[in-house]
Amino acid sequence: MNKNLLYRNIPKVDVLLEEKKIQELINIYGREMVVETIREELDSLREYIKECEEEESALVRIDALVANIEKHIIHMNTPDIKSVINGTGTILHTNLGRAPIGLKHMQYVAEIATGYSNLEYNLKEGKRGERYSHFEQLLCKITGAEAAMAVNNNAAAVMLILNTLGKGKEIIVSRGELVEIGGKFRVPDVMEQSGASLVEVGTTNKTHFSDYEQAITEETGALLKVHTSNYRIVGFTETVPIEELVPLGEKYYLPIIEDLGSGVLIDLSKYGLTYEPTVQDSIRHGADIVCFSGDKLLGGAQAGIIVGKKKYIDKMKKNQMTRALRIDKFTATILDVILHEYLSEEKAIRNIPALHMITESLEEVTKRAKSLQRMLRQLDLDAEIVLEKCESQIGGGSLPLERITSMAVTIKPLRITTAELEERMRHLPIPIIPRTMNDKIILDVRTIEQRFFKTITKQLKESNIFEEKA
Ligand SMILES: *Cc1c(COP(=O)(O)O)cnc(C)c1O
Image (cartoon, rainbow, N blue to C red; front, side, top):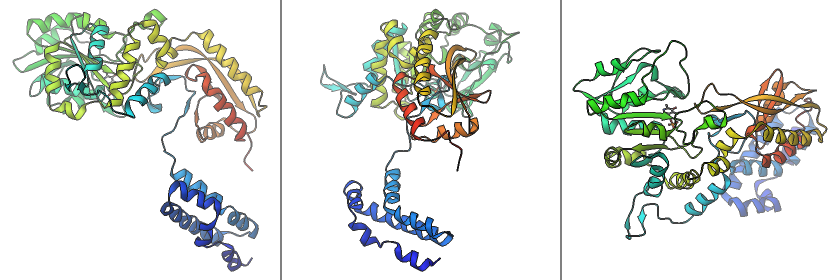
């Protein structure tokens, strides 16, 4: 093989620049980027030829030069964050972006965010307004609280609350409620950052009313309850419910704070799930301040929502830390839009994707699963495609023990291993993230909307992913 001849077959940069395809790329992406990419591709081609031992494959690679340049540029110009299809059945999957937002809701955000808005402008009075004002009334109406605001996420909410009410003071909290949220973030560590010092009372499994009372001193700033939303302590246990803590707070003039974590606004026990304390209940029981996530059971965007007594919320709004934790216009808009759905429980369940998925009946999921199975079987894939009952989870650190009976399309590949198929599905242009169980791919249809079925079938059909590697 004459390598010098092969090298001479490589087109020069200025010749490539005359190519129609390259001209098109320059028009779209600019000359500088195209030239740079051409250089990189030429380098990698020369490297390839140097190592290559067959003339044939070197020639093929030279022929593919322009196509490779195009691929390279397109790849470079494609955002890395992309849609995936969630076949895991975990509805609030933190790694997959927690609560999906409804398309209609997002369209409203797009309209607002692509132009100017009254985000911080009071149209009635023609002067500066407040970004929380748009949904504060709504939150008060829904939860029964006096005032409300929102910050970047619930961890930020906890920090702001404690900084405002407990800086330089002691905050009393039960040892059974010192939650780690995930990603190694621990609520007690976040709390310490607020400048308040935690006073832990009770034991892991039992905390009594008297434990709280005995810990109260001159230095106490507040009593804190943390809803153990992502785990349960069962068996020989005792906790002091918020309604019993409230009188204690009143007796010593101390605010009662409750971090609800998942913050549900609808009593899910009506839909066959375990009762999860609602924000309304917490307020009704007399909590002074309640905080919760915007993208867990609420089904909205990442946010930390704070509701409660006006005198405390006002102090938080004035806290300088708020400026660093404030929500942006996207979040403010999404909260405004989504909270409106909660004016009617029926509407919320229907229009908020996470709630819809949680409450969707097995019959409905099965209907969809059958339709996906039919579509997949029509493709004649090298796989067994069967329907099987499975169990969905809520996820996002909410209702940890809850399992919702669901229906899965299972795929058992015939010519490759299940692990190989799982990996290949993950590398599709729109990755499909399944669960694997009993050496089968499980696509839990509860978390897959009908509108994604075409994408799934099209990709499985065109990608040859069921074939053995050559
Ligand atoms: C999830 C959770 C948080 C953190 O909420 P983010 O919105 O993820 O910051 C804090 N406290 C509890 C009890 C939680 O469950």
